[in-house]
Amino acid sequence: MIVTPQTRRFTDPLPLQSGAVLPAYELVYETYGTLNVGRTNAVLVCHALNASHHVAGWHADASGQPLARSEGWWNNMIGPGKPVDTDRYFVVSVNNLGSCFGSTGPTHINPATGQPWGADFPVVTVEDWVHAQARLLDALGIETLAAVMGGSLGGMQTLSWTLQYPDRVRHAVVVASAPNLTAENIAFNEVARRAIVTDPDFLGGHYLREGTLPRRGLRIARMIGHITYLSDDVMNEKFGRSLRPADDEDPAAVAELAYRYSTLDVEFQIESYLRYQGDKFSEYFDANTYLLITRALDYFDPARAFDGNLSAALARARAKFLLISFTTDWRFSPARSREMVKALLENRREVSYCEIDAPHGHDAFLLDDARYHHAVRAYFDRTVGESLTAEVAHG
Image (cartoon, rainbow, N blue to C red; front, side, top):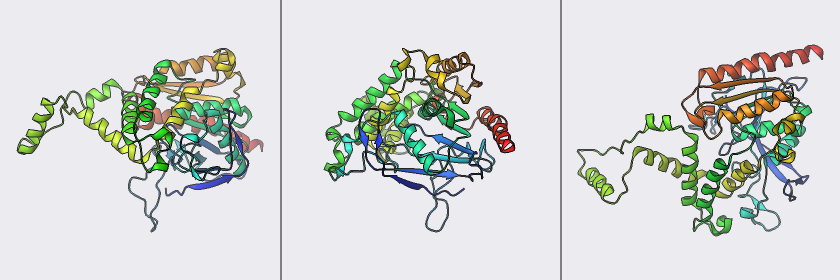
């Protein structure tokens, strides 16, 4: 499935929760499948922290051939014949404001200064993203969504959709997510942010103006984050306490390993892996975007306006829900999903809940797991599909 990103420019300013107003802005998005005549089969997919609008399929080169390594981040979930079947549903995925993958963000030019926004880009929240997504759907002529779906931070956006636009969402699929972050999660985010802002090349967030990048800070931030996405079992199974192997026939390699022992810089395989992930991340992700998105994660808490009462906060929701969690996900644990299930049931909402015994930690929501994919497929085939069929028949 070859896909091409699209861009929509909005000239009406967007009021933000912070009180700031974002002037004219652009949203980059992709669509998959075909919107039906009644415009009732649309599914919005919301992305997580370091993902983008490119959910499924491949981008193409000038000759129309798939580009290497351009596979969408949820390509195992979305597409023809897949759990979210694009032969039946019209899927829309939007790059959030403040990101570094095309939509207006800190790397773009601030029209007031003629310089990159940098640290001056306004604070954005999950609720701001949802409002911007709703504007895009308006522009596409989509009034009601068959479903909204997302994992992790995308799940928070999904939940927020059911509260901000309860009459526009029929179904919500919330995967490996939570109604707010725990103090431990906020702490991990803050340590990662401090790694970035204390990088000498951060320059108060205006590094692009000076032609620098805070790569060291981004590397550390990614390493911290990546540790939290994996389970202890996966790290032990994949890496254990193994050292990075040296070629016994290469004197230079043996000498290097001996040197690392003597300088307390022994490279365990897990260390090498984390450094690789950090290096790769620092080459394509923007530091200010990382700060903005982790803050949006921290701020999200729909129960705050209800004295912490999640049941009261979710009373506005009208959608039917599928919630999925993974047993070894300690960053967004099953207990957090069960909190949402309990609050929804207290409001007599229709809820399906699936807790999967999987070893992969938080990253499980991105991986191939037959039980997980079967649960999503069954929900879309039966629950979402039945609603869609009934609406067509009623129309």
